[in-house]
Length: 67
Image 1 (tube, rainbow, N blue to C red):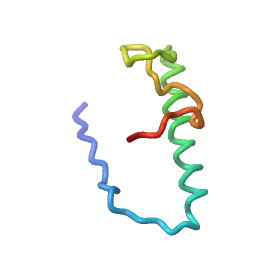
Image 2: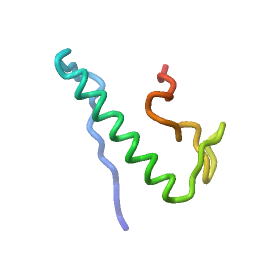
Image 3: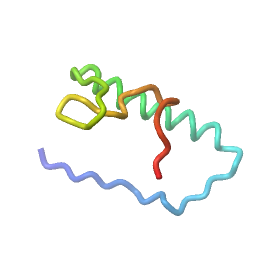
């Protein structure tokens, strides 16, 4: 398969405060989709990223903020 991801740069996007709730819902959903796929592949939570563990494999509300 020849696939090159091309994400858009959203670093300078400023959303109106009225969309904060929607933004959180979408972020949680994206995380849950990612976590569901990892769990189905046999991954589990672990303190370090490896071939089958990931520290971010926790509920969205338990994720640490990125610095």
